[in-house]
Length: 277
Image (cartoon, rainbow, N blue to C red; front, side):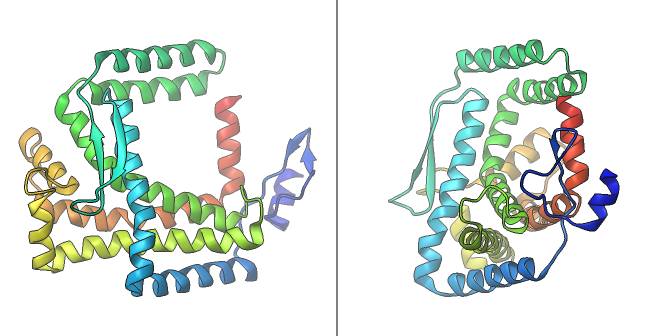
C-alpha cells in the first residue's frame, strides 16, 4: 500500500501517517516548482548582472565561505573566527594555533556517540566511519590545512544544495509562498557566483594574477593553498588551473544532488530511517 501511495503523489499530506509514521512521497516537478525555479534563476541572473546587488549578495556567499573555514578549523583543532576582510575585500577567518585539547574533546564526543548508539548497528558503523576519516585528517598538519582550505568553497555548495532542495520540496519554511522563491533565488545566485569565479580564474589573466597575490601579498588564497598541498604531499600536481577546473566541475553538484534527493526523497527517507532504527 505504501508503494502504491508513493506513485500517486509526492506531497506529504499534513497528519497523514502509516503505522504511526509520516508518509514521504517522491518529488515531482509541477507548475509551482517550475515557477519557483524560473523566478529564482531569473532573479539571480539580474541580481548578479547589477554591480550593487552583486556586491551586497556576495557578502552572503562570503559569510558562508568563511563559516566553512571556521567550522572545519574547530573540528580539526584550530580555534577559528570568521570575519569580513575590510582591507583587501572578501573574507578572512582568524585561526589560532593547533590545540590538542580540542582534538581530544572531539574524539571523546565520537566515543560518546558510539556508546549512546551502540544498539543501532548501522548508525554505529556510520559514526565509526566518520570518526576514522576525521582521525586520518587530524593526524597530519598538511591534511588539516588541505581540508580547511577546501571547506570554504564546500560550504558554498552545501548552502546552495540545501536551499535548492528546500525550495523544491517546500519543507522547513514558515511562509513557503514567499520563502521558496527566495531560497531558489539565493541558491542560483550562489551557483552563478561560484561558477563565474572559477570561469574567470581560467580565462581572465588579470584576475588570475590578482588571485595569486593572495591577501596582502603574504597569505595564499584557498585554491592555491590546495594546489600546493597536493603538489608537495601527493603525486598530484594540478596547479591552480587544475584545482579551478575541479571547482567548476563540483559547482554543478549542489543542484544535481538536490534534484536527486527531491525525486527520490521517499527512498532516502527510508535509508535515513534504517540508519537510526
